[in-house]
Amino acid sequence: MFYFDPLYFILILPALILATWAQSRVQGAYRRFSRVRSSRGISGAEVARAMLSEVGLGGVNIEYSRRGALSDHYDPRDQTVRLSPDVHDGRTLAALGIAAHEAGHAMQHATGYIWLGMRNAIIPVSRFGSTLAFPLFFIGLIFAGTTGELLMSIGLILFGSALVFQIITLPVEYNASARAMAALIDGGYITSREAGGVRQVLNAAALTYLAAALMALMQFIYLFTLQGRRR
Image (tube, rainbow, N blue to C red):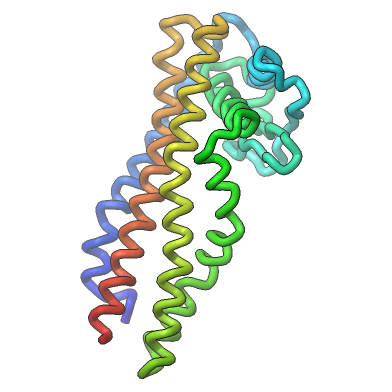
């Protein structure tokens, strides 16, 4: 059985450890720097608006996200930055870093950042693939002969699309954070002493994307080796 295969745990364990550590880092950095008020006293929404206005993106909307804490995101479909209440109204280093990061995604969209375009294009395929990949693969594992091989191959291809999405996400997220740090420092929204705290928040968040990509890669390798053992 898939769940009791020692090879699966050998492959997944490093990614699982990284994911757990990354999540702990995110929560720790967010808790710590959500208690440190910025010297400028500007809110997350205000810094995002200022950053976008400076580069001629005043038409980008900034709204509350209704998904709860740490649900901040940029939606390219309606060009809207959605910030959780603590980030939207917060005047802390954590709020400024997260808001600036999402504004960085809006800048990527406006400038035609190639990796963002690729990620947006593959989203429908990756969602479809991540939903059906495992069911098709393991149904194929049950069936013998050509039908089983075909279903496993389709499942592997579909999961590969989800893996590609995770890999493409890495440069998108790291670039958005780099844009955020540059805008915050160059615009004078944070001091040089505050930059370290903001950077810790953004770096911790980036680790979660790295962990997700590693997890997807290890799962793909496992499926590939499992198909090979079936033959």
